[in-house]
Length: 458
Image 1: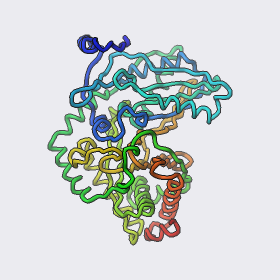
Image 2 (image 1 turned 90 degrees about the vertical axis):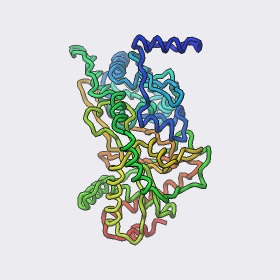
Image 3 (image 1 turned 30 degrees about the horizontal axis):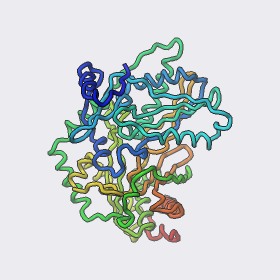
Image 4 (image 1 turned 180 degrees about the horizontal axis):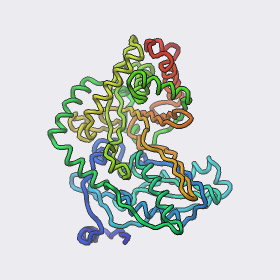
């Protein structure tokens, strides 16, 4: 049964009835959800907290079949039936037993079917706000360009999803669509682990002793770290979506980076992060670089099919010495990464331990985000349907600067996310040029000193 919004005078009685009948159940916020409410300078309801993607569908799909498939996904994934009930200390997750799919279908005219026009229409879907109390906290709209060419536009609030969740959604959607075909038995397989069950397991693990042990590491590791742009911070720098600038590193350079990482016994992530730190050193003049990087938090097989906000954030600090060879810098960065990941803890608890509360215009602990998007980005093909996912954003609005790198067949896509009121596009392009030049030189001559890699990048 779909729950209707109660009138103000009946809200308390309605909630009591819903809870008693099992139509609704309440759960505490998960640790990642607490991060949004307790540590972000961006209000939770801000549309900058929307995660957005386009799913390109090929096949003779129908409106009814698409809507039925989305409904099956909603029935399987409890977060798509979730909203938030304000509480005395912090909100509670309010999970409905049933909820109708939030689905729309739009036939595009010839003038609307072009890529630029589709982009404009998609932005309208992405920019609609969500009602955090009433829900639902996602919307799915299919654009039909031709009989066999459709785009599913998905916007979902960061409080119930992360980048990994988009892959889980597309796999669920395609399988649900296949189940609706004639002659296919219709069964909804339960998730191995629901999002609320995952949250309960996390709360059971993160007891005070474990949190205190890891907090001691971070107090030492981050002691004396400096913010890069204190003078730029203000109440206007943490609202609204950041602008995007997209560049591409060619496939041969991506292959060379992989070879460099293997030869050094490190990882592609460490190679990219070391390069990013060096580029920021050149761009800002600071040799003490602190960034935050997301981690999937999906090491257990049971949670990999689940839509939900599971990802955490790990700060990583690096000292850039221009007299060091890049190979030595890479090994140092890799060791620091291993230490930081080993001591990762919920960001809300880390901020509390460091006593670095959010203030207007700046994120606690760090203001730069660096990410290698290595979560699954599936391309699914089933009978009569194929689907390809292109991500657009992953809720990075609370940082001054973001660099998101995704491995594609044609190379590495580098997305720069920035606030134009802080950084003109020309400056972001200069940073992108420094990054690419240093990366190319480091891949071909890793024994060169960092100062040599930076030559002619000023």
